[in-house]
Amino acid sequence: MRVERQKQLDDWCPSVPGLNAEAMVEAQKHVDNLTKPLGALGRLEETLVRLAGITGKVVPSIDRKAVVVFCGDHGVTEEGVSAYPPEVTGLMIRNFCDGKAAVNAFARRFGAEVRVVDVGSRLTELPAGTLDRKVRAGTANMAKGPAMRREEAVQAIRVGLELALETKEKGFQLVAVGEMGIGNTTAATAVSASLTGTPIEELVGRGTGINDVSLKMKGEVIRHSLDVNRPDPSDPVDVLTKVGGLELAAMTGFILGAAAERLPMVIDGVISTASALAAIRLAPGSRDYLFASHLSEEPAHRVLLEKLGLHPLIHAGMRLGEGSGAVLCFPLFDGAVAAAREMATFADLGL
Image (cartoon, rainbow, N blue to C red; front, side, top):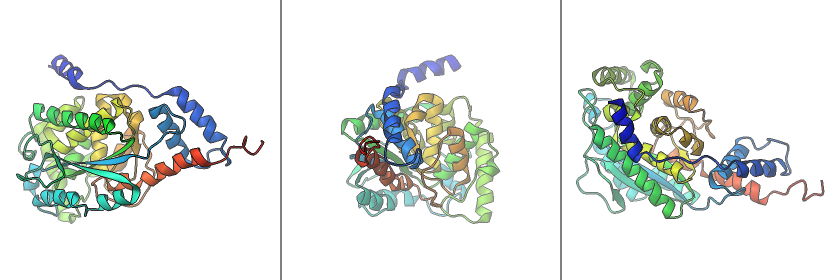
């Protein structure tokens, strides 16, 4: 069975190129010669050097930016794990398309395009502007059995892969990934627990703002879901199938596709980071193409970032999702590139 699964994986999982080491060396030399003390711009310098490795350009261009918001519903909401009813997923899809959500406001301010993808909501009529890539109308209740069939998880991953290629072909140079799906912090926490082996009580958080009673119940639902489904931690697709979500699988594919296309990718909070860990387990080289935007208030997020070895650029106490934290970081990327492009070097000063 494991050999068969590996063959299936080889059929669709893209190869990820390594970073351009020469460009990184030249970028580091350039950054070190700017008129400032060595390392004084901190992680902005690290960001610039890795952007050079991804793009092959010492001073890359990242003027065209996008955030792709993947949307899906979750059957586990039947267990009362969210402070909001599942209908809010559909309402927020409309809100994104109307340009009225937080991620829209940030994107307008920072010059990014918002792309809304329905990969698994229960909406039957999608608002104008939504990309219809629906695999199925929401997952099943993972507390009673697998969230979806394996072939559905693979199909959702393929949706992400194809959209990454499309995004690169449209000329975008920096992308963020976001999501919307009532109940998806429950799924993301279950995925995190399975892939990291971390005790559930160290991972479960309040999501949409549940109270203490609901928080305890949420942890019990996650534990029960893992007991019922027994996902295989060595097989990320199995984990996504059994306790994940359609938007989590699609984000996993998008991250893989972006890495394969040498497209720098900014992840958001706990849900996109759970997808990032799944992607890296499938293709370890994809980590080099990921940037952590912020540290969420969700406990699992810190654990996931530590497992990935990624350091967030900002700490703002956020837990909104949508890709909002990732887009909020876009000006820091612009700052890193502007410093490299516009600052004088010591050579310019005759030193």
